[in-house]
Length: 324
Image 1: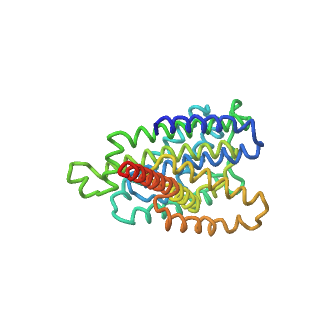
Image 2 (image 1 turned 90 degrees about the horizontal axis):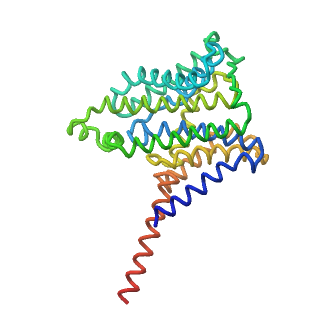
Image 3 (image 1 turned 135 degrees about the horizontal axis):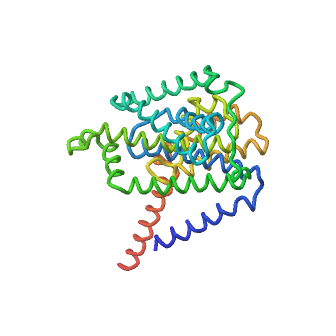
């Protein structure tokens, strides 16, 4: 029964997503397109943090690297779109490999510290190496003919988000996903059973970097222009907050967190709450504190707990009626 309910809900959700460009304004379509790109970035962090238990604070920088790689390959090198996009993802994954080789040998919070330092370095590089990033004037990102319409870019990013979800689900349901989760639960015990924890964490991080490179390419494609702020460490915290509020170690949580919070922030600006842009970190921080206190597993985890509680109450009442 529950499977049918899920299938119907998924069908309605997909139908609504497909109808968005035709039932709302172009501005809202753009906001949702950007929000979906952030959702892909949040899903990528979910793989290394939610399922493998390694807190990366470099995903903002890696998203920027993916965006710049795509922009440079498409604009300066002149590569075809279908070559530039996967190459940008592979370059991001390769840089993730170079970062992960030394940093994933650390234990405890040191991986987060190392990746945060890497994020700061990347921002400084893109901010100062104008020959690479174009400096404050930025890097132009060409949009292919078939993606020049806003609705076309919306459907393309939606397709990439769905594809990312399918691949992530395949990974976490496979033996590889079980291996990731065993390291998250108890790394020493996982090693005792013969799992090479370093290689497993490195694989998880590289796959995660591939998808955050895809997210960066989607942002570059939609914006059509890049500047070094896309590599700032604050973007790493944004992705982390989206994940924690939505629900880590779930597939729907990162999407709900990223799309919901991105849309909410934009809506508050739109209805005239002036200054919210400057106080967005405080705003997100307050939401995060409330969610962590009352729903430590995020919105999705909290909803599941409530559903389980309601089911147990219902079954208990039915049992009591039978006994009476």
